[in-house]
Length: 121
Image: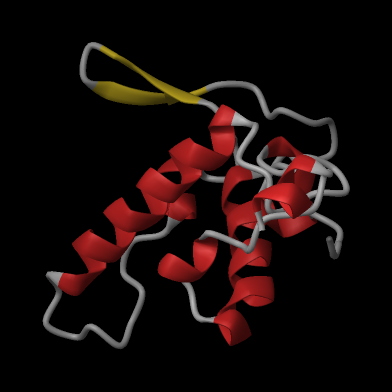
């Protein structure tokens, strides 16, 4: 296995710790919509398993956070909090005096979730 990795082979996906295999595509689409970004924002193009980009590691922490929050609701079968709850289709958010402030969208055309074209990775 080490020889294969050294030769440039892709590692197995790590996201399966958080997601079931059958949930991956729909979940990634929801993340793209919630953040207003393309797949390459977190993934290395051509190597989705790579952990090279720090955004991917941050995303894993945020996924775990939303799952933890949603687990505290009585109706755990429903998603109460998602990426969109805070990001509203904008990848970068910040706070000013304790209030959340949305920055400009990361990509032109991703102004809000309603006018986004459907994409697939």
